[in-house]
Every structure is written in structure tokens, then in C-alpha cells.
Length: 138
Ligand code: CA2
Image (cartoon, rainbow, N blue to C red; front, top):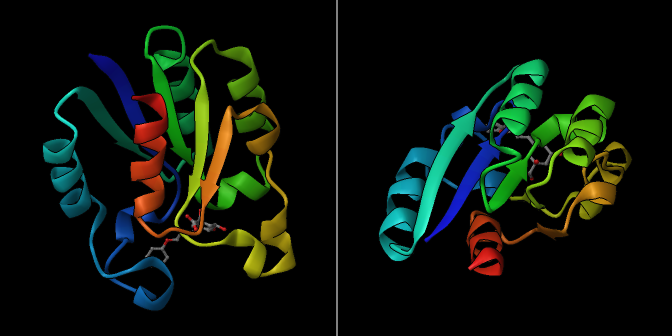
């Protein structure tokens, strides 16, 4: 059984409440229930934080024992050298995901401190981006 974790960054706890045209209308916890049922052979954990350092701490905590990390660092993707460095410092492979296609949005969303150190990047498929990342580890 593969031990995986989804780590979500700032504001993703509000998913399903606003901007449904970009992010959909399902809350992340509703989505998680479905996904856990669909992939019973993944031991899937979930963590969300709005705080940059807490995301770094979680990467350190899971980054030497888990089989895979699915990371949507949200806005920190585009700003956080600390998260980029943390991915570099751990052993567990990270797949970067985004719900939206960040390249069809504002210029500031076109850079990522996560991508250079990620095993792969999946973006633009809505919540299905997370599912594709799980499949990549299975
Ligand atoms: O598309 C993605 O997954 C993003 O990582 C989402 C981030 C954004 O800053 C990235 O550029 C792309 C923002 C998440 C905001 O989530 C919301 C949830 C509910 C209502 C409004 C925003």
C-alpha cells in the first residue's frame, strides 16, 4: 500500500464557496471522501495550511517516510523559495498540482518555485489534477 499525502496551501480550505467558474463547486473534503473510496489501495492523508512555515514543517515531517507527496502550494507556488528549498531537502518525490491552468492566467502565476524540484507537474484539470497525481504514484 502506497503512503501518500495531499498538501494544500493557502485559501484552498475555502474551495467550493467562491469562484466556482475557476475552482469548481465541490469542497475539498467532499472531494477527498470520493477519492479515498475510489483508490482503496492508496493510504491517503491530507493536510492544509494557510501558513508558509507550517507547509515547510509538514514537508519535513512526511518527506522521509511517505511514498509520495501531492502538493498544491497555491499562491506560495509563485513566491516561496522556502517551499522550493524544502522539496529539494526531502527524499519523498513531490508531484505539483494545480486546479486551474496557471499559464492561461495572470503572468505572476507563470512562475513556480515548486516545479524545478518536482517529479512532475499536473495542472488545469480541475480537482481531477489531484486524481491524476495519485494515479502517477500508483
Ligand atoms: O489552480 C490552483 O490550484 C492554484 O494553485 C490555486 C491558488 C492560486 O493562487 C494559484 O495560482 C493556482 C489559489 C487558491 C484559492 O482558492 C480559492 C478557493 C475558494 C475561493 C477562492 C479561491
